[in-house]
Image 1 (tube, rainbow, N blue to C red):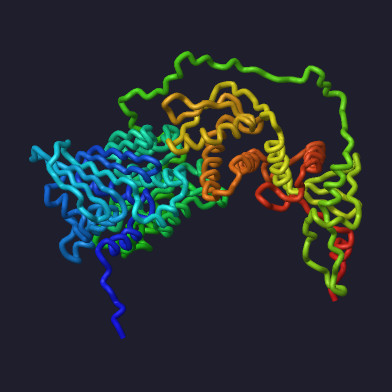
Image 2 (image 1 turned 180 degrees about the horizontal axis):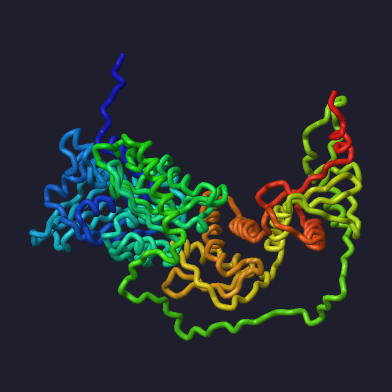
Length: 607
């Protein structure tokens, strides 16, 4: 029998190894930025085209490389960071495996230019699929410029798995944030398709957070600082009132490296117990310093997972430090903030003329007359098809199942809602009324969400909003501002009036729906963008429907809110006019009916 085991060629082995290190453009960006920081750079530029598919370029002013090092750095396991196995537990740099450049060169066309401080000329190397095509002296600035072109050009199957540009760019932006937040002593810039997204100057950590997420964060954060033999903690945690539904603004760093550690993140969140609603999460930007000999960062190719020897002690210290920060600064009127010497302002567009506020009113309205509309047969049919009463019981045993709502099966009895029907609330959350079939229960929040959603999706003209007394400025990151541009039409249709400031990530809101306060707008848009990012993963989703669903969910009345009798009647009547009154836009049940027969069974003792 012939031999079947072969030694893989280097090109194939490198492509396999590349799959562990570079799975998307953001992974290549991470490796290149980390190499630039390890070179001792004080200024780093990131340039991408087509979300990294066409070009990823990183330019730094670091120490540069010699001719031989420039050639050797593309070999697998070539590294200047470690010499022996023990060095793995004394790592102070970002990269150390020696796989990044070799993996990138295996699946892209790479152009490297580098020069050391004491050299008059630099070196240029052109590599394509691990093969060196050209190497020669060149004139270039001190430092390194590396361009990665046509990523995955020789692995089309991998290239086909990339998401659309907006998603890939958001992943690159997240990598950029993770690196720039902790390395606030380095200046960074980020260009995408020729447009400047970020221009971050070296500054304090708090200033860097404000540069990345907006100046509003200077009033949202408490400083946290603690020194111990186990861990040194420094950073910022958000005030409890600014907790959000997502964990997108939770950043934990160890020795200058972003990590994912659920246990340590939970330590911070547990400090907020009984301070924030269930399902909400605080933002934090916390940097830890730990003796490298007491941690292991070599457990995953991406180096975002870390093991600690003193995990339980670190959990307790981090939780206590967070509690201390929340208690110490909760009564402070403002947090310590070192303002920049530069005066920052966003100029108005040339020839910009502010819009004069206007009000709309009905001149024929008479508050002393009441008009009632008679239900159409179509509305009656909606309700008739809404309720299906389940009369099936086995013997004398009461079936515990509440009637499911199915619009496909006809009811046994016709639902009747008299004009003088009395309504009452249960726990200020559910609307209840007596019907010919039994007891009708409606979730008031889900009902309002359905009503708002159908008004938004069915109306051809924009829904009028309320002019704000003073326009509100809402600031976003560069990618989030682009998302606001994408969903701007849906927002205008929903009653907002807003425009983006020229060459800025600030949106000026001059009108908003009636039930949104000025101080809620920033949080409203942040949550809306977060939900939109999640829906982008579904290529077949209807963008407008997703946006309107999110807006309806955010604008609906609270789950627990007292309502007047007329408010309950109006809500039920509006729900009756909806096309799909049985379920909310998110697929949750709106109402159910407890039949008279089932109520009788509730008062019987089981045999």
